[in-house]
Image (cartoon, rainbow, N blue to C red; front, side, top):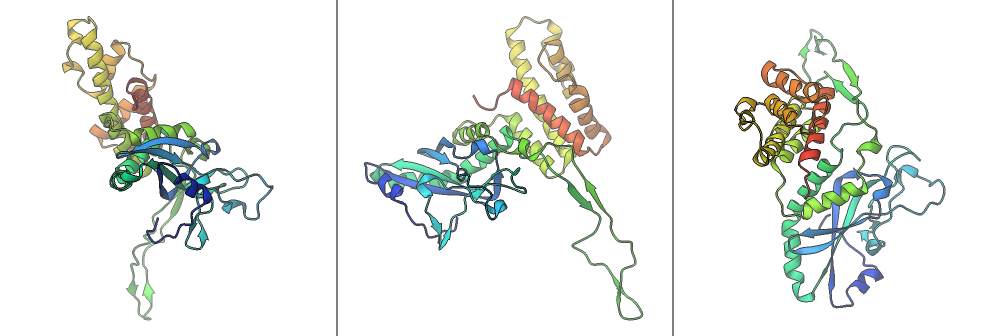
Length: 340
């Protein structure tokens, strides 16, 4: 939000400050609105940013009043404390009720509200703490959105073109006119084998878990750092990178899980060492011997695609990358939950 934004307080906001505490507000603006499921709207989550404990509140659905005059731009209802706030002389937009279609579209959230009740003599200290720690908190919030949700999975059709839209290549002909002696580029449309918008829209539990992760001081387990890189590689259409990163996430997870098991169980001596099981395939073989829960298609979905990329220079397809990443995701969820 622009620092020059003019806000108009509501009577609720005045009431919040009439007791022993002052209420500190923060408006979180999402440059790319968050697609969510309807049940998430109106939710309030406990959070911690720096030294401050407070709440993170989402806008709500408007009251049903028949078909609106402009259904694709029907706004969401602001949180109660912000119901009359304006940005300059305009009503502040917190999101839209329908995206892309009416009435089958989903909501998207453009803003959310932070609220902290602060003792008067701690206002400066708490405000500074929130301000200084907000960027880190928001980064971890979006990590949570990707870890617990499926925002990174592409939806709809993608257009791929060989037309160079950033280069005009030509020469002058005898008539003094530009000539382009090469064939026009071709456009092809690729429809990914992905889920619908409903499946990638954030749910109320995913918001809750993302807020919990963002508010935690615990470091994200290393496998999830690689898994996040895989998700974002999918989003960037770097499918080889996605396969490699997600394979590393699985290998580390299996290694840590096996080490715990081997340290507790009386197993044959040849299973006490990782020397003959040091590759991803080796870890999977050892995990199978130890009876660890694994996806039935782990070899075809993850191990073989990873080996093809690493050893044969294979260029993975979107479908291959998605299958590998989702397989790895199930392994991490089973053996290494990201939240304690």
